[in-house]
Every structure is written in structure tokens, then in C-alpha cells.
Length: 225
Image (cartoon, rainbow, N blue to C red):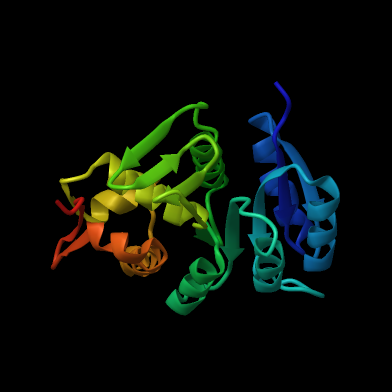
């Protein structure tokens, strides 16, 4: 089996080596970049990067700029590393299309676990598709169509919609959604879910009404009769 490539971007060589060592042991091929410009050059030159681990504060081009540049061309999963744990930074990252958000210092084992979870879910077996209420979710291709029209979702929006569709009719607490979609005991604020739901509903058009809010608890996905 061909090794999956992961691009680790951080201006601290020590941090890159730490992450690289843990990922290499797990069988990944790790590429490194010391600043944002180098990261973008490597990403577009390689064309087959499976996932990015990206620091926020870097010279030449910071992590936000890297995400904006890559998201114009690719939905590759991105894990953001930052020394700042402020909520506005986290929400900015999700708004730009970041899939996971880990604050330094972090456990390398937890980072590797999240990498494996993202890649495992994005590598779902071919032919695994779900259809409900005019929405078709192709888990292998990571594509969603609504009444035959493609809808572009971020990685986490896709995972969230899939989780809702697979549990339609069930009341889902924010904690349950965090554990199943963000998994590995995500330590962020539950409002992260509300931000993603709001964007997901907007992209779904009138079918966004399928996602019902259960006040003080969470959400329920229910196809209108």
C-alpha cells in the first residue's frame, strides 16, 4: 500500500521533527515546510498531499493565508496548530475551512489519532452512499448533491451532514455530536457546532430545514413529510 503523504508546516524545526517522528512510526510519509510560502509551493508541486498539519504564526505567509490559498483549489483536510487558544481564532479557522484545531502544547499521540481518524473517514469504501429527502451523500467521493445539484461542503460540514443523515429522527446532544464528528474528546466550545450547523443549513437551501434545533440540548435531523 502506498504511503499517504502528510505535509507538516511549522517554522520551528523541533516541532516539525516531533510531529514527523510520531507520524513516520505510523507509516505516513511526511514532508516538511518551514514557512507558508514553502508550504504552498510543496502542496501544488506534489498534488497528492493527503492532509496538512499547519501552524498559524509563520514568516512570509501565515497559516490563515495558506488555508485561503489552498481552499481556492482543494478540500484537502487541514489540521491547524496554534499557541493561541482564543475562541475567535478557532472560529476564524473553521470559517476558512479548517477541519481540526489543536492548541499548543499538545499530545503528539492525540494529534496522530486525529490524523488517522480524518484519513480513515475520508477513505470510506467505494459505493458507500446515503440518500435521504433528495440529498445524496457519496461517502467515497466525499460529495453531496441536493436534488441532483452538487453542493460544496467543507470536510467538517460533510461529516456533520453525514452524521445527521445516519441518525435521522434522533435527538442529538451537542456533546454527542462533538464526540462523534470531532471525536477524541474535542476540548473546544460547543458553539463550534452551532457555527457549522448555521453554515451547513445555508448551503442546503430549503432542505436546511431538515436540521431542527432542540433548544438547550442540540439538534435533530428530520425529513419533512
